Image (cartoon, rainbow, N blue to C red; front, side, top):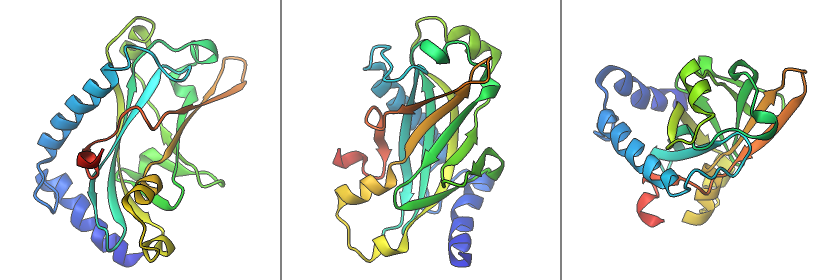
Amino acid sequence: EEAMRRYVDTIVEPIERRQTTTAGMNVTQWNAETTALCTAQLEALNGVASNPSGMAVCYNLPALDNSTGVFMADLRLYMIAAPTGAFANIASTNVQVGLSYNGATVSAVNSSTLSRRADETSLISWPRSELIETQKRAAMIPMLIQSYAFVGQVNKELLVANMGTAALQKVLVPTVTLTGQTSTGAAVNTSLSSDEATFVNGVFAKQL
């Protein structure tokens, strides 16, 4: 864990202080490129969401060390359609985003945005502005709701298994769920598809 922390520091600190990664990637450029690619990919859905929340996820890896299994992840949530059903009238303060990996663990770069439940699903706070609350009821182009940066570690036992690219991609793509609470206190859940905009930039992008 200490070795991972030292490795993480070499990645995270330059991003915060110099806006570049250890590989020399310009974070401003990364954000601009990823935003453009995510938007283009999600626009192709023509405003049709795969879940009642009206949300879609764009997920990418800025960096991956194949030898240590340490990776950086960029998760962006977009509103692509008006929420329907039970999600239509849920207050933003009553929604959480669940993030779980099958074969890896992650920590948020800003740890205050992520907590962990007993079932190992990470919960991310999900603030939404009044502007979003108003616009979500109308037809819209993909609109970025929230973005998150993570540092993760592939499970050690998987590293020695000499996985192929397809198997590694499966490990590195999280299951993203939304959990909301209605005005009556009832819980509603939905999952966000990982097939709509994954690996459009960064690691694996050229292989899809």
